[in-house]
Length: 142
Image: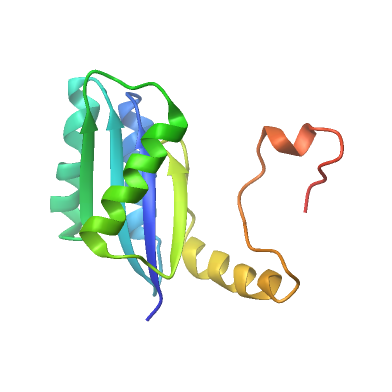
């Protein structure tokens, strides 16, 4: 079974955070998914969500890294999440990075892994959603 370590950055926005974590865990598919949530100084409502959803989904492969006071540096928060994920779960075959405004459709991870396997054969080793980079001259949408 394929193992994926996911790191999700969270800061406030409880409804989006709930949706992002819930859809990630519910719709992952057949791969083994380990989730590390990095909470960068969220409000009380958001701070309680990862444990509530972990209990609801009966999952033990979810961890939370809490930063307080908030760091506010996305790259540093993400790197701390990756480090915590590797220490708690070991290095997965794949690493998936998300924010708390992501919505994961049914089978999202199985689909992403299949696309990755196909694109890797052509020398592409990084996949992601459409972002601001899609509008930068010289970078085209795939």
